[in-house]
Length: 351
Length: 165
Image (tube, rainbow over all chains, first blue to last red):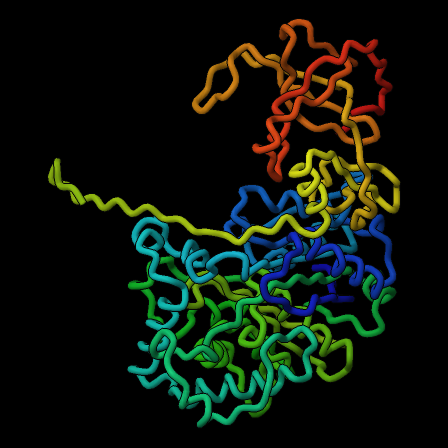
């Protein structure tokens, strides 16, 4: 295996209903990431993009994103119809093949230009679930209800996740929602999709981000303290919601085992939990103790959830914690699909 | 729901609506078409003029496009296709010509119809000009132009680089 590290990141401050095109949204973060790392476009051996055509409402809209990275002279690039974190996984594999030493991963989500709750429903089983348009929030609410009934989570514990995330977001320039709220104050708010309240659900925003990966000596040259990827794994549960135990995330647990999360202490964990109860499930699945590990110091997806970019944002935040020296060992996580169906877990370390 | 052959079926059409934005960089181009003007954008890096301005970004330089540039209205056919195949929703009588046209002052070609001549008279290098629809029909679309027609000027010899799109 080659040693691969994240050496630079850039994130766009969240916006609601931006008038920019996806290409205009992406371009500045690509420039920012390259400038921070101090490389030219010509030094990038592989580009990988994560986005979702259903969100822009245009088939093959992702092809236009190539304009933002420049395709002349010819480049090597790829796209995943998924969160940018999955694009990062592809780039990591590409570097492992030895075909390149430096890769740029980027993602964008114009989450507020369409009805995201309906659009994300298209991730559900296309035969028996998606045609019924249950709504992504509603599917998550059913999961929360199952978890509450089973005593796996409580509404108070969910509100505590929201309160902590909103307070932490005050230190995050990318975050959209932020502020100090007591748990009792949050619990007094009305349900939006019972048993979820508005603050239990990720906040849809428009955003874009980019992450630079490099192998071995290139990584040491490009970053003072690279965030070395020590383990990365992606697992998927069945698409049949009725066939899953929704009070746990089996795929997250297996991915965490294979990524080696439990091999040592974790200083910071950036988890893509678009719903408060899902953070509680993920903490359990990854074996994280909130007293020993800082969970989502960025505020996470609850304070800014640019769909298809929010997972890569977790990788960027975890890597930045290592760059800054605030963490020696960090976990980044991405989920997709309804009720934590897919999970990607990555362990990073500083030297 | 139907049970004609004993098998239960459910018809469940799905759809979503979007608030689509052309973006600030393509807006002057679309606004121009509403006003009967052909507006492209110049890249501040390579100075190429894009008509249409794609997504507001120069794909060669990966830079946001800069100043508006009025192009045309005349242009040159860089390549073309004679359409003989009928298809659902066809609006023009076959055979007709779909051509790539390099407007004067632009560096990428655009596609439009060539009419007011026989299809077999169209050739690479032919000079053409737009025929606009009635002003009441102008909108933020190249369909504000009904078609292009020959100007009768001498043909232009295109270099290897001309008309690359």
